[in-house]
Length: 373
Image (cartoon, rainbow, N blue to C red; front, side):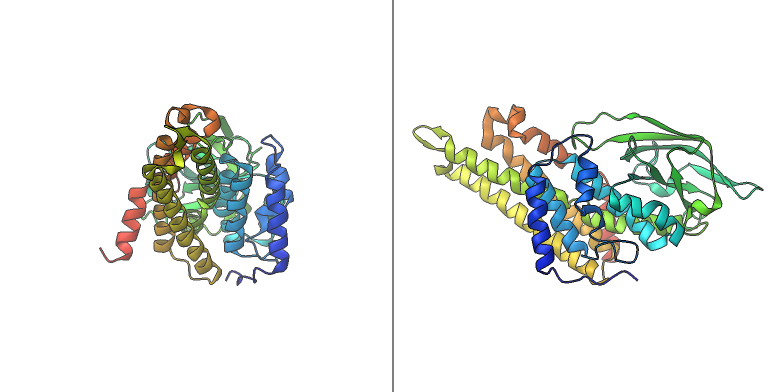
């Protein structure tokens, strides 16, 4: 059982104000991850026993939103959120005390980076069709062979949570999760994958060539990988887009400032109804996305988050993010093509949000099944 949320008391309010102030001055450099972690960001949602702040999921999402809003960074908050939900959450739920001491505590403190490796070249969202396999030998160790791609944090990760097939037949009982340190023989990390959006978040491919892993590095039980995957996806789909709320809030403020200061035909752009309507639609998208995501966070804090709600949150927030960003180019006109407006970069981030953690079509399928369809 996970913790119950502690109240967002005066101490958290003060912490968030201080974090906002820090985030506004956070440099986008190689040290930014460690500095953000040193503020306590990565430990917010974890309970006290393994060293967390026990502040709850809503508090963690508020902090991720604030980080993106004040810093203007998209990739770094996304990458840190990916670790929080897809690596730390499974370690909290399935990790042994030894595994939590060796991996979870350094991850929360910023002394290590974690990456979840499930996607493969031919499987995409169909994670149950993965081909990476692990064979147990007589010495009690496992040998992993296969490849993964689009691994967020892959180039810098110190530990990988890797899903592999350990049995034929049912996909549900044939997967196992392994914790694989970066320096494990047979683990080869590919080059950074170039992409159009999420600047600052690094992706890579992995190749496993007789990668030897001890039995003590299983996360959960043999054949329990599906449970690990579902646990990670429940939280990742629900909260991976928390930083986008901050990006939207920042972009809305900047767009309002732009239309108020730029004149056309003798009056500010903000005086034209078509411009005002675009901004209202953007405000509506942001408000709607916020309402859904934070209601979901409160469900998680009450230990009532389910997969349907997680998928609904991912689908809704990504949809509103895309609607929001489609208005930006027509607010800026030709200036939208200039890097300083950030309009095109944000639009690329919005497009990407429809695909990671499962495509929008996959979220639709999960929601429909929950409706009995």
